[in-house]
Image (cartoon, rainbow, N blue to C red; front, side):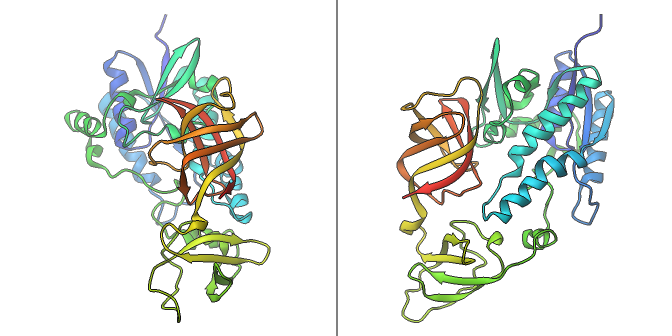
Length: 358
């Protein structure tokens, strides 16, 4: 009887390459799979280069490399939601949906058709299983990616593996170099996966028409014009085009709100402007990995990736609505982004931020 098969999602990067190497070293039966998730092959797309990097690693490891196109699934399940959120004046995080819908949705289904029992990726996270699966932070706190995985269903986590979750990034690069992988020093991918290094406004304008409007100070003073509320997010400083204003201090301006009905961008002076600070948020579209935590629970939460854990209390918890109150007011709590809840190292789940409260 042959060993169980693990399919490794090979991105061409160093993390998934080392994930495959670790599994091979452990004597696992391993095959790679490269995903094409975006249909446009323009000058910003690196899919061809990434595929060649993945192919070379699989040749070194002497494992097969499959290639699958999930562009239709990505467009329907991730990108359509991305555009809808921007139309509604919110700021989405498509990488969370990509993990739920593509890597541990479409890819997992495809891998099972290939006969695989497990899908492994290069995520910096860990899984503990005892009948059910628990999602844990990666050992490398600076690289922990549990935030992006909090919407993955518990059943999918039971079929997942994160081999580099116990390692630091430097260790991963050292392993890749020792193994002779050419991508050992390859730069980490950044930003939204389907946009790449292209200018964000240029990309978004291809799908959503610009709707210029007024930029006003928090007291209603007209300061200028914006190109479209979708191009701005709470707390943003750059790209406002506001110079010196008569009668105002020279302090920088920040986005402190959006008036959607009147298509106005509201700005204020000071990094910690009172309008940017919130003690409480309300979230919807919740997903809990296991049983929802009880109301009144003391825990920590993040409102953005790489943020330090913030002590908080879960005021209201159910499958439809989550109310979180933080011990310390949080800056730029952004509707459309995710709040992710932790109990120590364990990621409990989270949801989409619906509103913020002073």
